[in-house]
Amino acid sequence: MNKNNFSQWASQSHIGRILLLGLLIIILQFPINSIEDLVVERRATESLAVSEVQQKWGQEQRIIGPLLVLPYQKKRNWHDAHSGAKETTSETKRAIFLPDEFDASGQLVNETRYRGLFEVPLYQASVKLAGFFSGRNLKEWGINDEDVLWDKARLVVMVSDARAIQKQATINWNGTEYYFAPGTDDSTSNSEGYHVDLTDYDGSTEKYTFSIKLLLNGSKGLYFAPLGKDSLVRINAPWPDPSFQGKWLPTSRQVDDDGFSSQWQIPYLGRNFPQRTQNYPSIHKKVNSSLVGVNLISPIDNYRMSKRSIKYEMLFLFLTFTVIWLIELMAKTRVHVMQYLFIGSGLCAFYLLELSLSEHVGFYWAYAIATLAVISMVSAYSYVVLRTGKRAAILGSTLAGLYLYLFTLLQEQNYALLIGSIGLFVMLGVIMYITRHIDWFKITQFPAAKNEPSE
Image (cartoon, rainbow, N blue to C red; front, side, top):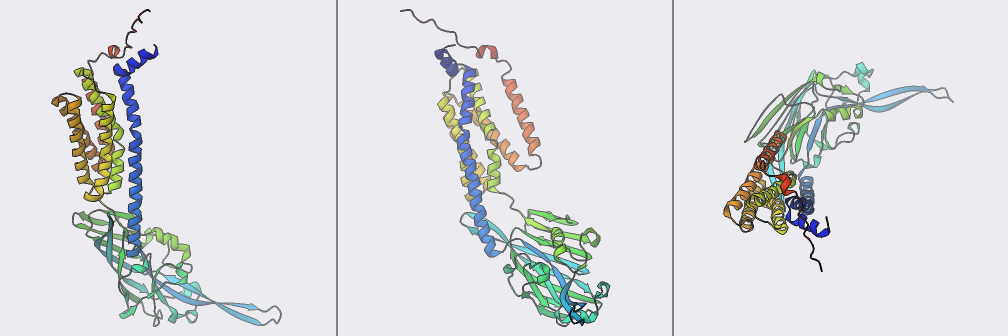
């Protein structure tokens, strides 16, 4: 087959046009990739704006405490090698105790701030920690009472973003009110938080009750460490889309459009760290891994939804071009490759419209407006290209069905794969049914060579 025959076959035969349309779909991936890169860029810009607000307001809050820190003197006797005299040296160490009973509650109040176009969900948490410590006897560790520095006892509460506290934090310790001071203790891994010096503590009482109130700003999530032999954690918020996290799921929860309430009951035996230690850093990682709480996720992430919708763009191009080609084939009309290009470009513009509008009106409205705009434009253009309103209606209806199908896929997280596979199966079946009488041998033949006139 000479060059002229191949050119004629590629431009006039149906198989040649199919190959050209395949090449056109590949070419249209360049603008699609640019739009996908734009989604990533806008999401990075949003993340930066959200992070700036959260850093100034308060970040994710992780609360570990209270811990009872008891300093003591560890004495060591030794003999001087030169004089033979007996010498005694002492070193200050710290024993760390966890509460016997621990009850933590967090009541969250939502607040929304804006940085430019971007919405930043925040919260203010009213936190209450209650429970009791037993009187401490250190003789089990070989420590005499006279070696314990009782007046140096300290209660420590570690908070991941301590600067976000909104008012003076207080503790009711066995009926006595104390004010917290900033900082924790060297023995608690230098974590952020607060402490109170228990100057009248002597460990002689059987039970020391505590009640702590904190008012904290935060964002993203709130977590508590279950420190007691019996631990009860409760978190409530007027947020309809919580994501419960941590080593344990809530023992009970209730979620509705008005918010959620959740409760954890965690037994001592389910943890992997002791109630007391002389080396807190050795169990700090285990305590951190035991945190339970909730993330306040956004119900609709515009950029995630936009990126998910772009994943189906090739299917849209393929099916739209297939419908136009079948109309060409059955109605014996012709559509120029440039007209295919314009229609394909319109389908690509959908994703740009969807992205830009979602930053102003939300994803659902953006999707509806972009869908209506693209279907209207393509249907109006195809009315001229395909020469009848019926053919334009067929193409417009196909696009409407595709966009409705895509919206269903975006809505469903658990059944997206099932719906997607069934949809593709049905689409393939429809195409096979419509083309069942086409003589593929006939339409794939090369055009007959024409005799060149002799000179």
